[in-house]
Length: 102
Image 1 (cartoon, rainbow, N blue to C red):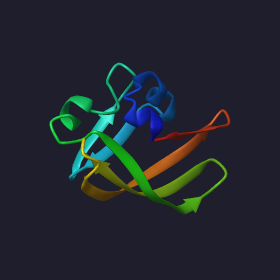
Image 2: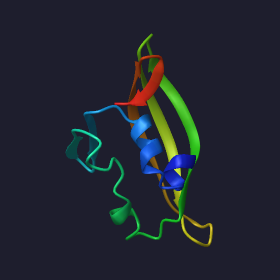
Image 3: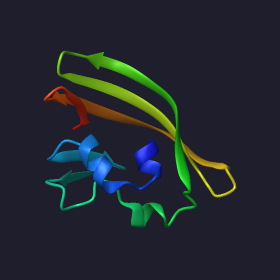
Image 4: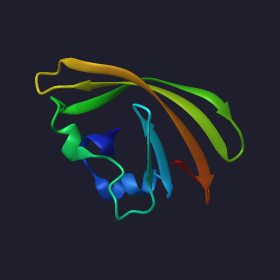
């Protein structure tokens, strides 16, 4: 979450596997490579967002090279007021010894 809040695109690119697939509000998006940002900070900044915080992470299933995680997180505004709390599900894969979001 630290690199997400810092808007550190180069560090985030190491966290995500490519191609990367996500479903947000029922819409499937595929990010083929690092030429397309994995996080839409332009859209995020149209909200009151100042930073995000993890509330809880649950490992729902884990194998030697893959895992399914449930992430409960919140978004906060400049006054440290929570304006969104939601849950995301992430598939992780281990490649060359490192876990990445698929």
